[in-house]
Image (cartoon, rainbow over all chains, first blue to last red; front, side, top):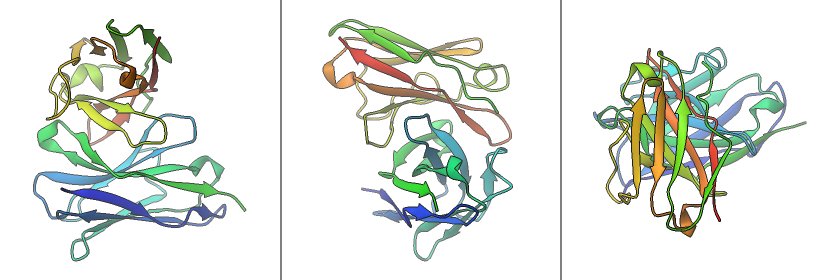
Length: 121
Length: 110
């Protein structure tokens, strides 16, 4: 079955760029039915939508983060990447990759296990 | 985009029902039937419980049900079981391809 796996550095310095990758296994990112999202969760807090990408490269970003976020897709590797620049301690969170579907009313039906990123010098 | 409002906590005894509300605005919950609910156990990824207000994905027990009235959506867990103790989050489409999550509710099974 399709699985998602996030990977990347667990520690990032303030003002630098956070970079994460989500690898899709057992399936393909090149699906007409789904898009690929990033969602984060600060320690002890709720979920925050970051943005999504469709396999064609079409993207949408949360208005609160769009000035700092870039999401890209590599269809040859079935990978989706997240870059968040100029990070601060407020960006410390567990970052999830999730699959969204228009046929699911934009719900997220498949999630990676998440990866913890700490912003600290 | 402000987070949708959920009560911080809810509780019930085994076998009872608990209902969690999710209040937004006419720009999100009230404007679209694209409300979804997620269950999250500690240290785990969220799990989709309901989408499009009332629809259950394959594998989700029918003890979980949803409804919506105006700007407020609700999740009801019937026949509470010990494994239902978790955090629950709502999510709504908010127009212009944007989405917003709820503040989260911790459900305790007494």
